[in-house]
Length: 452
Image 1 (cartoon, rainbow, N blue to C red):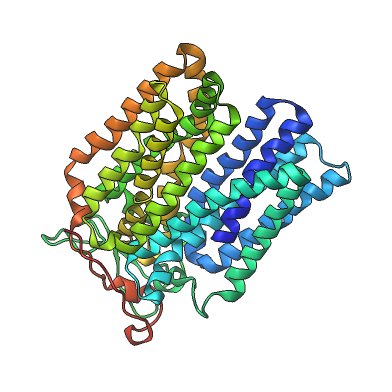
Image 2 (image 1 turned 180 degrees about the vertical axis):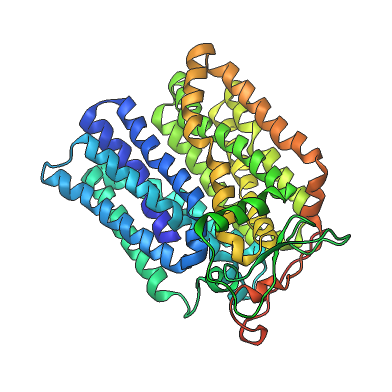
């Protein structure tokens, strides 16, 4: 994850700069970003059954290998003067489409890594969050230095090398037997029956809604793609807590996208801070987020989830919008961004742990694919809507409205009753063993924390 994410963050600096330098068009630069991100979201949503059937390990290294080849062709064709803009768009779209299932497959292997490492799920998801935060902090710095010293093609070359190395790590370096296609023989081969309602919900399931599978002699052949897709959708629809989380995160992601891609640059321009202000606020936020993620990885499994979760959102959301709208001095802005980043570091460990605990292992690919894609659905539109709003009414009103929406979304949604399930005692469900394709004696015990 560290290798592939860092390469992607380097590319996020090098590719827009390359397009802007060669075309001189901000519109084309934005179009390239849209063309990469839209296939990422759409393909990720549809490849959950593929990850479950083929296994996350195979999907991960294959997708990264495809990304490496296509990303490597960009500097090669440019050097040969054979890279028209339309071909660049196609190649960027292919990279985005491959990244979706590749990232999904790595996410799906996190709970298995937690089992093998005998660590609480919050610690595993916390370390995953630390990795992402570090990549988001170091990647742009490396990308900016490479572009400044050697040009944008150097950054795109590094991206291709990172994808290739990430593919090799997943294919060759993981423990033997990890990331197998458990769903193909443990889930798809068994008939589907609706669970009868009961008074006691099983861990990780919604009563009366979750599909249960009963093994029978002479199991039928694996079911088709659309039935597997439907099973994931049915499970997600039947879990009110996961649905509430997805809707809330989808709204905040849209607001965050508008903030990062439009509102902060416009603020930097109007305040006179320029690009240095963008880089400084982003670096402070990223470093603080890494610190929060590290602490979350160490102690989140001992903390009350719901309290920490909504406190984190309270810190990382509305204050950023408000401090920019008030025209505060740079020192105050940086302090608010540091507190905001620190609070954000606690969110993904809790979100990931809740999701991995509630979703049976044989459905992880399908449910995670749908959930992530729905949560990301607004990101491609965030910049477009933010830019249109600023052009219509100006920066400060948009900052105030977005900050208010962020606060309302993360606070009012917390009044819903399903959030109480976030704090119930976490314990290992029986499907955790069955879905891995190994016996209890063959698999290490899982150390879990207890929520308040």
